[in-house]
Image 1 (tube, helix red, strand yellow):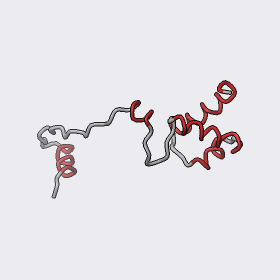
Image 2 (tube, rainbow, N blue to C red):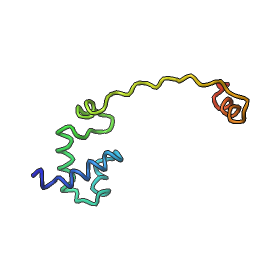
Image 3 (spheres, helix red, strand yellow):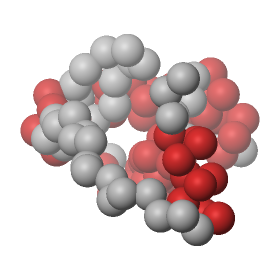
Length: 94
């Protein structure tokens, strides 16, 4: 059964990796029959390969480490050039 559904599963995973979507729209976007798509989505969900938006899956937690907050780098002193003045206006907190 796995070899029979490999192309469909690949298409579903590629779509969801590129653009997270609602389950009912996936058959429409992939031009696949819902009778084929929904059982595959259920299997992917049960195995932990996909998760509901706002939810977490174990596969996602182990695949991607948590991003650390970005540090504010020290900006070089503004010069008297045109770009320096523009940058200073853009970054001023007034």
